[in-house]
Image 1 (cartoon, rainbow, N blue to C red):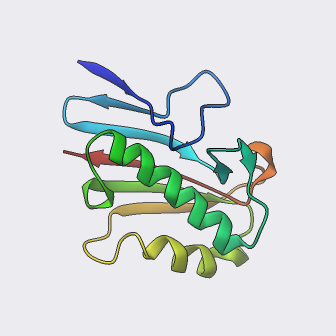
Image 2 (cartoon, rainbow, N blue to C red):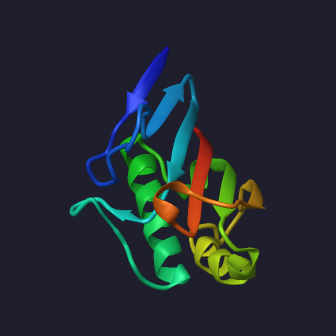
Length: 125
């Protein structure tokens, strides 16, 4: 009943977790950061570029599971600095132009590899 989803177009997990797990018709996607899949390196650039890479990583995992952003019902956004919220939100919004999912955005003191943004999602098929 539980299926592990793995895409080589998204970063490999950096710990004991799966990129995503599909249980029934629900997909739980682990938090993604701005690691470039083909190099394994952290993207260094603006907060918009970092967010765009995070969204690309999420999209690759959704695609591997047979879906896309239209299947997403919930996102969790974790950011290092709430002052970046507007710029992150603008980039994030490009993936959800119609019927955006529910979400929360939380400022945290630290994220893996000291990135500025991490996003997870839940999708239904």
